[in-house]
Length: 380
Ligand SMILES: Cc1ncc(COP(=O)(O)O)c(C=O)c1O
Image (cartoon, rainbow, N blue to C red; front, side, top):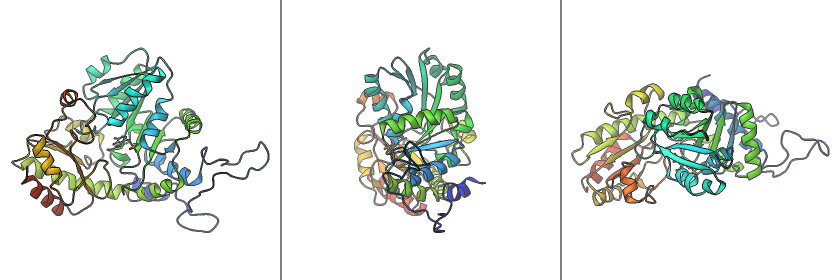
């Protein structure tokens, strides 16, 4: 079955009791057991819930995994994956990763005696040199945030496995519509379901998917022990969002590609970062690794902090907000918003210039979005 058919049918079978084509939202916190010391499929809502299970089943199918786990946020999902490690273990992460992941890695995991180092996952030679004997987990994102860098997932899986480490991929930006990391050798896929999976800016959630049943059991043990599970209403909303995931993502990508070309021609724009443009350094890998489109996030640079601020404050349809992946288009200035916690020197060293602007392209008409950018760029 094609992905968009599975997105509608797998995990969403009709309710056997009533015939309802949309399953009810199960709010029960606890479940009657067949006998003392006997366990049914569900017993307590932290351990398992039918509405959450439906979502986990759908996402596992879309990501070609054996099973999935849904969490209260993307960060709760990421944290659960890192709890596979023990004191003395090491995580190697790419440099172009979500700032909150960096904060968890650098400011929380160190308390548990887990060391994390960062190296550019786009440069495999340098990345390989950063592996250590204690490396148990390699963490990458592709496309990366906010520069849309492209990492070769299959090559990273080979590097990680050569060192006895697991490869985890944050697949939030690509979605399973465009990239399925487990098929490319990764062991764990993570999503901020808050973004494209939910798709409507009304859910906070996270998901892990794995292809090994034993690893799924270990992760479920950690999830149940630590408790950061997704609530039933969120799981329902997320399942509903996923039914249109492929249609949304493909259409948003089409508009993003058109806007990237428009921006590349604009005299006030110094540089456009979009893996679909032939001059993007990761274009060849992206063309191979991404399924027919290059994502719906576009970054571009104008001349300096003040000019970028005028542009992001000057749009009418693109709303000034962090987050991404929903039907409404968003605009933000990484230097002052998503990446403001970096030291300026560190930020610049990562290529995140003062004049950088990030767009999350939504589902509005492409002509309206282009006009909006045109009038805002006139203020740059
Ligand atoms: C790529 C990426 N990964 C992880 C996260 C964290 O997810 P959440 O905000 O759902 O905890 C985000 C949130 O912005 C993100 O953009």
